[in-house]
Image (tube, rainbow, N blue to C red; front, side, top):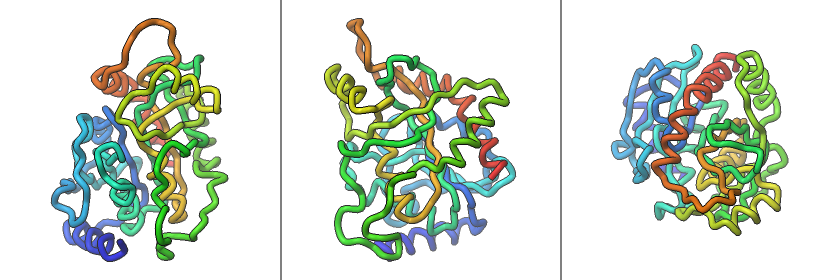
Length: 270
């Protein structure tokens, strides 16, 4: 694994050698975020040694280097999911590569279903904690000491100081944001009504098919993390409606300007 990461890192540096200080993971339907960046280099995933390739609509599949908020950043336009058939090592491979490239902070976004009855479609939710029992932990197997300790502490997976910074930025701009607990599941099915109800009862405010494995890998390596969900559908509902991926993508697109503003201002203040 270390050899593969070193080879991927070396290739990326041969294409672009400015060291990023912030890594950004863009969720479903949030690709237009890139328009706010001063893009300096784009590298398709299929050009990078050992990199997986995204197979999901709404994930373009490239690393984008440039400046945002006056800082050197690298953004993942397209992430990888366990439900695509990748093992957890592949899902978190880009996070580890970004760490080896030099990032000091990781910002993560996703599209999520709301299990909190007070949420509505289009809400932004700061992830203050997560429940990962329903996913495969990416640290299972032999520990790689170069990444971090065998038993990493997960009492603060999402840094409180970054959360407070985001809340202050939102308040100054009169952007309404929620806070909540994100439940990670495997997918690719959307949850049944009974599953939504269960997740709500165990303390989940939103549910999605990404993020927790990436965050576990980041915390293992000592990276401070901030994450935010766009609530793209509401799972706790009485009417006989269904959820489609197209609707998820549209809801994420509609909420994207607010998320982009928050991320941009956060990066400027780091």
